Length: 159
Image 1 (cartoon, rainbow, N blue to C red):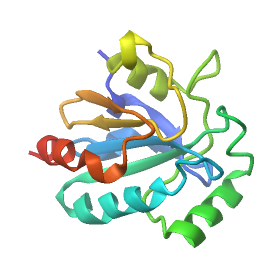
Image 2: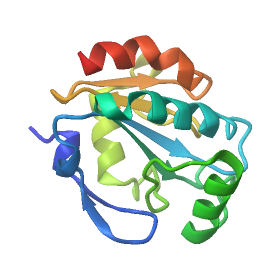
Image 3: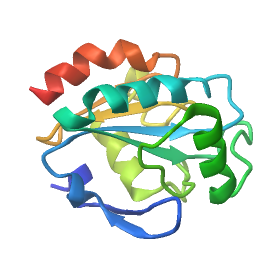
């Protein structure tokens, strides 16, 4: 069975990153956008990163332009926006599709492992969050779920 840790993705600078480098860690994987009503969640994601990184949490951001064209910039513009506006220093990755025929294989696996409301696999909007426990268990959170509200689930996943 394929787990999240079996995939390789490109970071925001285009370099391949095997997710196996995070094996044993708890991952919070989020599809992000710079011009979304939920964009201020970057602040909360950064706070989670700072609070839990030393205990084994890795927050991973994946920009996506599939929802209302809310991530139109290139990777350099996205990186600068996140750093300047929200002080983001958790890993950001190359822009991906999360739905459709061109969906990144990582997101296809996450959606299958943790379907959304009524069993739908589709990601509904930006800032959908997937919490991956070290054992590969995946839990999905809705875009409107504020990052701070995930603390109990993160604590549980960290053990």
